Length: 263
Image (cartoon, rainbow, N blue to C red; front, side):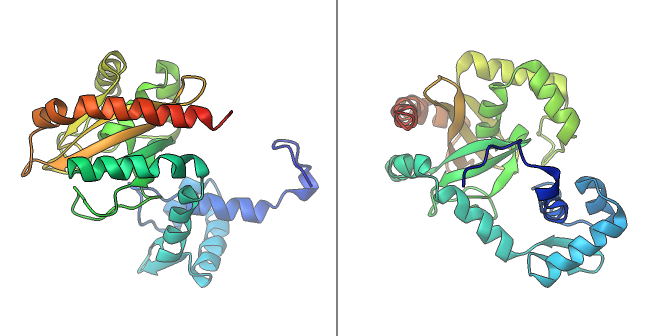
């Protein structure tokens, strides 16, 4: 049986399933724990409906609660992390990314854009730059990551503003995070001109990163290759001087692999 998205008849639409998924989608890097009332708002359902859905997801071990707050369990997190690894597109360049990490002895990753977040589709599992470990499938806010800025820069002004209006606001992770839309737009304009992005202390104090775009067969930015480190190890200037050119060369080769997937 083949099915064309957008042609489903109303009688075949499972509304309860859709609402349950909207509850899970309500959680993000900036909303890791919420009350039922907060979940109802984010999922766009009545509080009574949200309560039934949340309790069902707790019973199924997809959510857990501490007091009045609910959060995703390891079960759903592990489930989400496995999905990118199943995509042959990313499998084709995983070896290249990990080889780059070994060569530079720094954390390397590839991420795509989901809403106002980035999701890691490839990530070096050995080296880490943040206080908490990150894995394939994990998400971070795009506006304060180097990969995220590369991906947001691929949007035009209207697309960016609509996305922020629909999914925002942009929340600060540190005092250096850029959350003012006009300031972010100026930053993204520089990213477009340079075709690479850099961040320092924006996601977590002491962290630095640079990122370059990956393109598909239509020359559209489809992902970002990032390299991150800590200021105790290197400076941002050193990352640019020592690694940027090599990353751009590697990204060109990876983009060729991504373009080949449609041929």
